[in-house]
Each structure stands twice: as C-alpha cells, then as structure tokens.
Image (cartoon, rainbow, N blue to C red; front, side, top):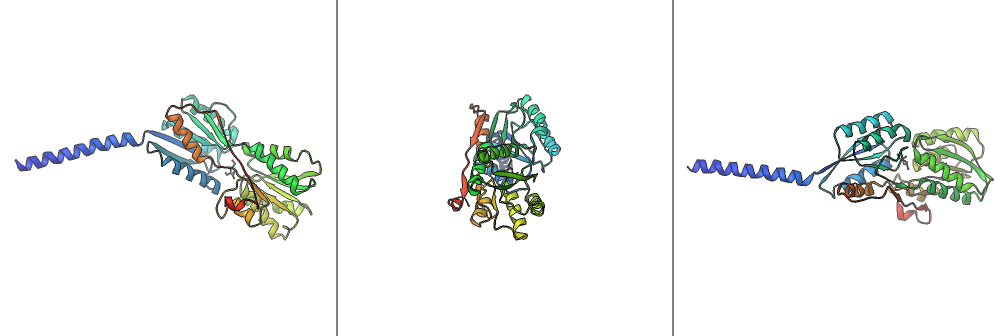
Length: 310
Ligand code: FRU
C-alpha cells in the first residue's frame, strides 16, 4: 500500500513537471526569428550580432537564429531559403549585395513572413521595414568635412565599399554632393575595397606608387580608411594626407579610437541598428503597426568629441 502511494506520488510529480515544462516552453519561446547576416567576420558585424542577441534576451518569447553569409551572395540566398523552409516567424536580413538578394527577400515576403531589411537595401519594396542610417547624408557630411580640411582644393583617393551594396553607392553619391561647390577637389583614384581593411591597405599601396601627392583619403568605412593610413605610414607618407572613414565603432579597434590616435581626422557614426531591429521585430510579432522606414541618426566624430564615443 505504502509502496503504491509512493509510486503514485512519483507519477504525479513527474506528470506535473511534464505539464509545467510544456506550459513553460510554450510561454517562453513563442516566435522564431531568422537573422541572415551578410558576414560575421568584421568587428562592426560582430557588434550588430551582439546587439541583436542581447536585446532579444530581454524578450523570453523570442528566439533568434543567426546565419553567416560569409560575404557570399549565394551562401546568403541559401541561408534565407533555409529560414523559409524552417518557417521562421520573422526574417531580419542585412544583405551582402542588393541585386543578388532581392528575389529571395521577395520570396520570403510573398510567403507571408514579415521582413526587416537592416543597414543595406534590396531592390524591391516587398519587405516590411527598412532600418538604417541615411548613407547619402553621411556621405555628404564626409564630403563637406573633406572640403573644410582641404580648404576647397586637393587630390582625393576614394576607397569604395562593395560596389553592389547600397551604402557604398550612397556614400559615394553623398560625398560628390558634399564637395560639389569645390571644383578644386578632384577624386584622382577610386577602387572597390569590398569593405575590407586588407583591401584598403592594398589600394592605398597602389595609389601611393601612382601619385606623388594625395591630400585626402575617403574610406567608405573605418577599417578601409585605417588600412590606407597604415599603408601610408609604412611608406612614410602620412604627413600631408588626411584620412576620413565611416562607422565610429567604439572599442580599441574602432573609428573613434582611431580619431583619438590621430590616424583618422574624422569618422561618421553608423549605428548597427541591431537593438532597434529586435524592438521592431517584437512590435510586428505583437501585431503593432510599424513605419516602412526607420532612419537611424549619425554624428560627426572628430577630435572634439571622439572621447565620448570610444
Ligand atoms: C561591415 C560594414 C560596415 C559598413 C557597413 C555597410 O560589413 O562594411 O563597416 O558601415 O558594412 O553596410
């Protein structure tokens, strides 16, 4: 008798644990978000991933899976395809290049999956929200800053981000607008540095060999601008050249610190938007209405305020 009571109470405990467990599970993860990152190797991307995960940790009902496109358009298309097959509740994508990722974004959206496009754009309006800073505005601010440094005259090397990605196109366009009142400023050399520090360095090595005078280097991001600075330093040619970049990432390797080190004259804050993306994902999944575009703010960071951003 005593034995069967024991067995019975054990079964009851096990059953209630099971029921509680199921209830718990249902109460915790309710929605799965697939985040297709174009690559997770660069510090700025790492920062974006971290922001996404730490913000998502505040919402127990959200689970985020991150895939790494490794800077390869077809790998990233396959990653999104995979999220579609897994029937994620929402997709966040930071596309490597615009055109190659457009179809797959449309496919996800047409299947009824809400899509947040983050930082780089695609060539369609079949998405739910775009979140990112205004790259034309940033490029223009960089152009105006360059014009000030150069006092309206000088030779510029421009190191582009990946040419098929929208921030590169827009940062170029904006820069041209920013220097447009100064015909004395000439872009004498421009190359695609694919957003990579190593390529920024190589491009600058070539530029240094071809041109005796380079007054300013405009890198579409800080890693490439810093790479170019290192090439010039190695060639003993930093004295007469200004270097400007974009991102202003905090941390020892970041742009604000590079300004404090005297490597960059200025950088322009380009927030990753990771936190905002999760807030908006939560709004969408909770049935709240969201705007089609969310524009993140930028700041000019130079020696006057860099210590605030390091
Ligand atoms: C990182 C990065 C940033 C840049 C952004 C543009 O992959 O190159 O440095 O600001 O992407 O999309």
